[in-house]
Length: 136
Image (cartoon, rainbow, N blue to C red; front, side):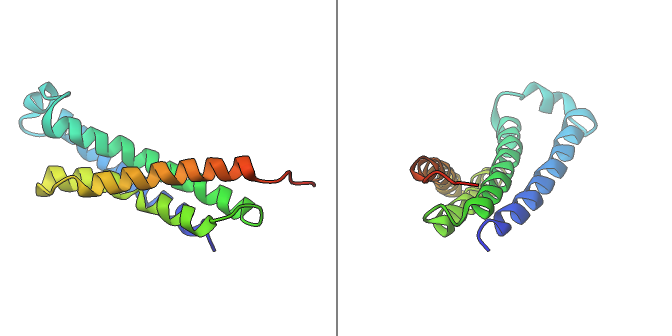
């Protein structure tokens, strides 16, 4: 069922990035070298990890919303499966940021995820514009 996986994976992703937020709090307030971490707020790993945290939760929420809308309006929309998969692929963006920070990988996942999520949101918006009026 298109949309169900978006909702489930969206909540799981949100839970992961919320928990990751606790690591960021630890690094800022309790870890050895916390002053150095706090002073690098807008540069380097600190900035990148905050980007991952914020985008991870945003993209998780977008998946929950996209999934709900796809489930509710699937009979009236076209390309539901493609929109669903593009939205799920978008989660690669914040994961890609983390792989850059912790594994030193290139930003390919960031770009793939960002393009996929942007495409899914625009495609869903256009689909709703083209949708015929639903009568109750």
